[in-house]
Amino acid sequence: MHITRQADYAVRAVLYLAQCGPGARVATAEVAREQHIPLTFLAKIVSQLSAAGILRATRGARGGIALARPPEDVSLLEIVEAIDGPITINECTTDPSLCPLGADCAVREVWCNVRADLTKRLGETSFGDLVKAPLEKVPV
Image 1: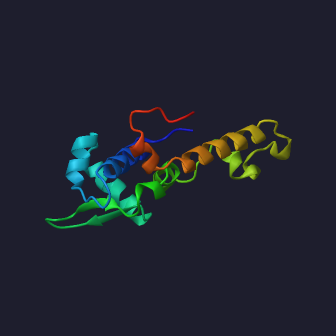
Image 2: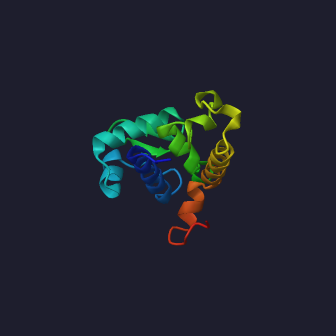
């Protein structure tokens, strides 16, 4: 599995907003500058995260972007899936009919378990957790 650059940028943008505090509305240009994200790329990401109900975007002189929910209620999994779609380790984990070996594949169960472990870990990691312990290592 590969997290795309777009998903990585989305995670960085959401983390920055979470670090700004509850209800903070920040100019998109500030997020782009502080997180080293190309502004046009961030605009696309903001659109996707807004459509997913993760961000609120307001236009105008007093506009900006803000989290639509508290950071504790937003998981890494939500961000990755909002940008990249569902997590798949191998296409057979979502559609076993794509594998010519089908039920006889000795590796499919491993791929499914890895996918389940990864989605569980990403789903359990909230931006509230990341903000509370930015310098501590997240337990592996």
